[in-house]
Image (cartoon, rainbow, N blue to C red; front, side, top):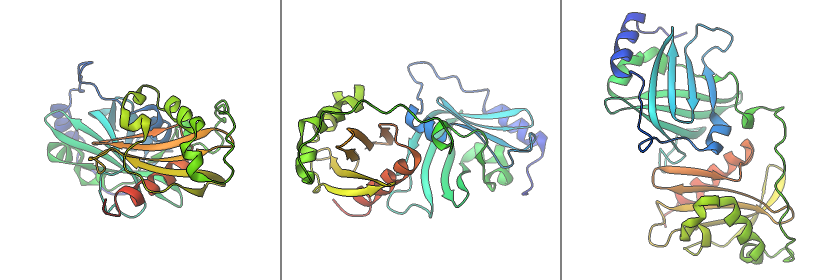
Length: 280
């Protein structure tokens, strides 16, 4: 295991940095429930060892814990597109936060044959507080969020949408009133954004795809005159009325429909292929 900075150095610098960030309610930023379902909870370099360094992903912040000391980043955000057009191999998501003083604390999430793991990336005084040892470790989920547990209780299925009678015509499926009503309901309060609710911006032709053993109508669209920073990819199963999506807005990604982990990963891959690996 990599060596760590001395306990005294970690405690001194972390204490001077943190104080535990207390953002006012007006300033607070929180990770959305769909992100927490995938990544929330405790991660450790050695879950069987209580003394091992631990990470916590909480709705309002990212935490690094060691020897009873805690380094906290607030204003948490999730960004699937953090690396733009050239993400690292096996990259999945970046969770971003700020430590008092303006430096960054990032949890960068990857996936390997054993599953997901987090690597820490930090800047400025936060990097000095952590030291190189903590940043060289791989942290794995100790009490995985519900979306990561292989035996997690199944979520109740959403009520079925009215049947779609469009056969195999994917264009008619996407244009159907059933799909549009299902989409607006899934968006909830975000349906107040016209480009997002109406899906009337530039869009490539929809197509049928198979994801995690199920067939979906795949659709992608973006905000007119602002495609790079405001766009979405959708998966819709007309037989059941289930819709999943990844919506990207400036520095903020949102998963819609609480997709299970394999579908969420595929949405992220599709989003990169559609909106970052080709010019628009």
